[in-house]
Image (cartoon, rainbow, N blue to C red):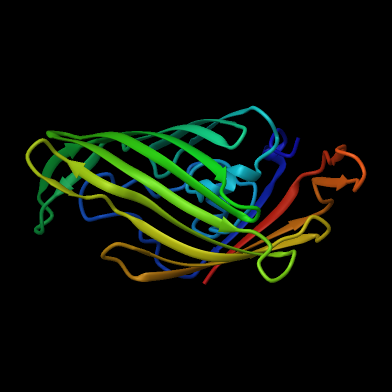
Amino acid sequence: MKRIISALIIFFSVTAYSQYYSGEIGFGYLSIPVSPLSQSFSTAGAAALERAGDLINPASLYFYTDGNEATMNYMNYIAGSHFGMFSYTNSGSQVLLKYFNSGLIEKRDSLNTDLGTYSANVIILNYSKAFLFKEKFIFGAGVNLGVENITEYNGIEGSFDLGFIYKNIYSDFLNIGVNATNLGVLYDFESSSAAPAKIVAGVSISKEDMPFAVYIDVGKIIDRKIFYAAGMEFFLIRPQTAVQSENADITSVTSSALSDIEVDIKL
């Protein structure tokens, strides 16, 4: 229910560090968030439970129990450029299609001479699945296939996403997670190079009867500096509460029609 009314969610974001998105050339848009929740949390949430969309730890899909869900998002990123995403999530798995169109961009040399215009187009397809490995250990994996065109340049990309979440470590509200994304290669039909891989580790403080959740992450994109991120999620009313009886296999679920207020603070 909370996903259906996601348009009512209020996002606050404060950025206090440079965003390092990708490698020097090719597929420079793999790590830019498109879905509203990903935009709010960005890199924060390696240990987040029940997370769907782009830029996630694939292990978090195991906790996503809202049934079948299809989402479509569009974002005008910078004047003339367009991002879009379609995703389908069901029973711990997700199919995601992501695209970017830059529009026309001016080309200029170091002397500011006008060299005409160019455009960039990228399409990325992802499939991810999560598995329960042990009672508290969840493993997730995904595969990415991409095609890119920048004027005369054409490239393809193939990569993997891997991640795990260890739930309720030392307590019933502390979780840890690690995920590595874009582990693969780029190929421009002449040479190959490494994809802009990113590794993120984090902790989350979250419990069903708590009115908030906290996420703290540290990560690194290959050949870039280490970054830190923190996110806080506040609930007016906890959107889903599950109560299990010790003597019965019946779970009653109460859903709230009120939306979440989510706050992301990156340091």
